[in-house]
Length: 426
Image (cartoon, one colour):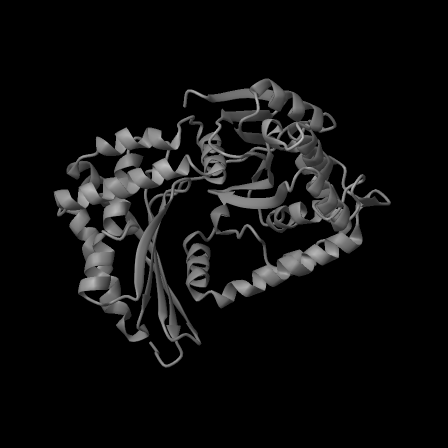
């Protein structure tokens, strides 16, 4: 994009700056890039919420809310994301630009300072993160983890990932487990916080009206106390084909079975075959004009819902369907039949056109959302790329029917996980 600039703020800290006047608020995120590990995942999930409980200058939630009010209702939240085998933790904040403040007072620089305060100067007791805050946020995180089982569709996908990626870091939940969270102490979380600050590469994203000079100066000042050391390596390992298909199931109290199928592919967002894979996914199950939706759901009435989606950092397609538990085999075979149709090039011009329209609309809409742009450029950093979302559109337009078929042929069915009702037995 013409108004995109990237520069180094500090050692290991890169700013992606996107100037636009289409929004009434500015948006900034600060992100630490970490290897996804069993030990660190729950710590990374917990840390942002603990840091948001209080700082040296704003020691509790009421003081923090009061400060946000002085910034004309600025908003801040923590985030823990998983992209491939990389855990990304940090904060994002939105606030009005100086040019739009009611009395002309500065908002951008004070907002940056507040972010730095949250990140670098939390409330400490005897040199440790406050125990009350740690225990309170542990309780909240454990509730979140335990509630995952209530969404059976998400639960089935979680169990598929754990099954499919045994022996790989990608199987690790970004939230950790209840037992891991329970074991966290102020000492272990403080040590992790200090390690994150000193040993993590950082990606900062800004989107809004403020000038590059104003933003970069504000961020450098806010992060002036950031310790820097040697950085921990992060990255994603790709594993394409397994020797044998894994099929696993569990019985739960559900009225609707949850069928999830995981396929591997060598195509990720940084490889030449990726645009064809995106088109293949849209035609196969990624939109309401897809083969799975129109044929398996609408025409055959085999599924209450069915769709496919991509994880572009790990080379994975996941198909998710809600079915009657006693129709597992017929639904599974019908889904695979539609994939075979893609592999053999049984794809109409209408399907290609509909997929292209849906994808184009989604990519264009991404540029109207600061949070989606933030997520996009974080992903670009991990992939070593620097493209805007809409830059993919001409690549999609150039994809042929033969390219789509070839992408489908590179999809390898790895694992199936099925959550079935209690009245259905093997």
